[in-house]
Image (cartoon, rainbow, N blue to C red; front, side, top):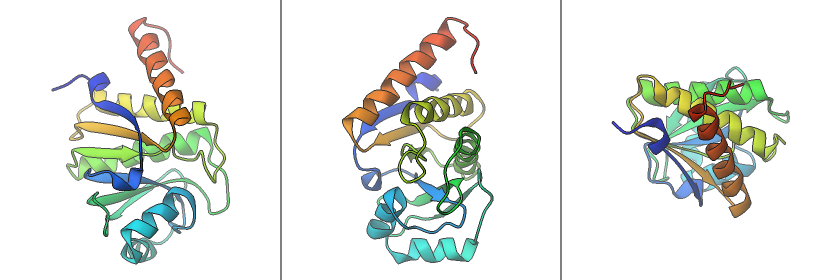
Length: 182
């Protein structure tokens, strides 16, 4: 089994084109696929994803839910509810929704999952803080017993990719040096 550092992959690209077991939607707790990442997932994946979300209904902020992938290459969409509809993501809701998404994937024996920078678009969460929180949660999850083999972070533009790469390098350096982690 690869070490956690080898199981986290950061790349620039289109999340909706990932051929993984699951992609993660930056969701609101009402699971309404409106704009941003959610809108792109709905456009490419089809109405059936929204219909499955409607059948699930509202979930707690900080939670996650899973649906089929519709017409996407990904077989599932995990909806990470980091905010209320029209609201803002917080560090705690981002941390909890990331951890819950990873648990859901592992419980269903999914091997690959791809995340966007959850909460940094419509929800207005700072990109650098998002990268640090999500990467730390991913590394902690992979350090335990997980079915997940690879976690991808798929960033839409080069700047976001670089922010995630710097955060990952810093996190690994801090952990290697035995520095306390927040």
